[in-house]
Image: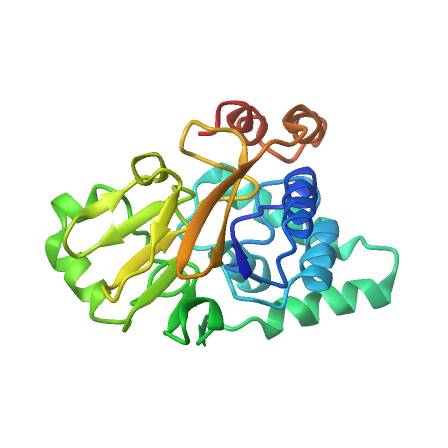
Length: 256
């Protein structure tokens, strides 16, 4: 049994709730698909918690932007990137600061695993897409409006590919297009067919459900899980941080 989380976005309340849920389920190994930081109010704490509680994490576009500078970000996201970098640099414990920077710099863009949970079948882990691991968005409508794009994406992996980035959980298959978790009864049964699986977002869900989202893979099935957390506590932190756009807090209350 393994868990896959993504898009924490410096939301320590959501991350702590998800990790508690993972431990309660007896999950032995957790992977993170990136965007540990950005948007939210607790970047250092989230970096520490992910490093301590995940087997491996990969690089998201917000993690990359904090390291190397933001490109093609909207004003609110860009402002959050600069604030995040400033907040990290102000860490009083210089050893902790160095550890956090080294951890971010060590993250790979993709990870390929063959877990026993899938009978040893390949699972590719990326943040955005197998074509452009850090930056490409794969939206639900792409299965209907962009068949060439989707064909190119499916050509880049052999069986299962897990992604985040859009914060919209669900499963893409070549035959059925995009299927949301509700239409699957919350569980995708793994077959021999290829599937691109979005695990949703821990710290900033955008499917109109404010609860944190992640998946558990076990016995050739993928279970989509939602976890409630103290959203208002995170929102208040955002509102009380002058350099973070209030929208980054209010959107959490509506899951958008």
